[in-house]
Length: 104
Image 1: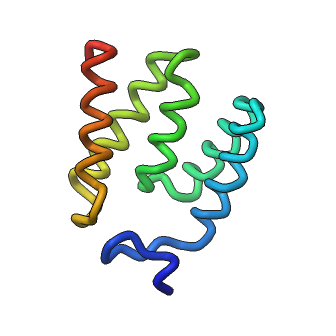
Image 2: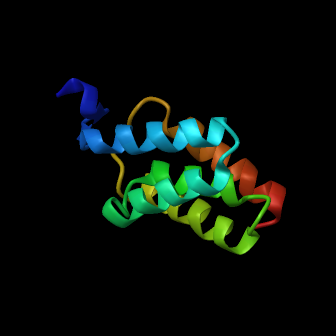
């Protein structure tokens, strides 16, 4: 069960599987397929910030409007849904930098 935890929050193990599959496609430069996998993940786990953040990364240079939606959703989920855990503030700082970089 500890493998499915981030801090106190328990996540279904499928999240790691979806992320792993999408990451392998992205690493192999199949970004369109990776995006489809993350979108499937969002269909089943719409409140998991990580899928929104990864979708932002894939869309950042292709579709600024959609990318922004996912970045802001990820930020919202981190601030309002997620418990406090080590590394959370680092992710929020990274989101802040992306927002500043894009003038959002």
